[in-house]
Length: 275
Image (cartoon, helix red, strand yellow):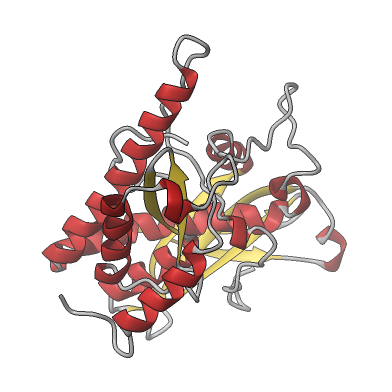
């Protein structure tokens, strides 16, 4: 196992222990008292092998029944995307609001954008978002663009249930309060997962652990929801945009460059989940 420079597995485990002492299940029972030792050990092992830092909120822990799962945050995905693709220097993102102009130039499947913003559009509704992976020389390595409809389709699978019955976003939800930040997280997450998918072939150990991590989380959630919903409701098995509790009020740290404007039975393996 080749860990990131400066990464301390011991410190990561201490950070995880502190986090787990405050982690509870849906019934507010402590995770350490309801989860099996095997699932706890597996979640901690996945954390270390993937080189994730609980203190930096790159990973968070969710309880499904008696199983503990380690779920990567969007910050964890950014770290892994850059780690597995050394040519990437930074990942930038921006929401696009109504009235703003975005010119898209696609060459060999890679899109570069010229995003023109004005102060007048600051409070306008979000109509889309994009994320760009930039190389050390400033070149665009990869990009991802999503319309608001695509973003909403991802949100509809969220464990947070941010939509009302009429299809509008709940104003009280984190998605309703921070539509620009949540839109950026969604598109960053999608971009990073594609980058991770393309980079895992360079490291079979990390590749196996990422697939195991995504599959274990999906199976744990699937099993829990099947048990909870048996004979009561139908389940929609689709990728979702996860929102970590500790992430909800925190802004996306990456900014657009100045010149540019709960359920997955078998991950694909890097669809739109989680965020």
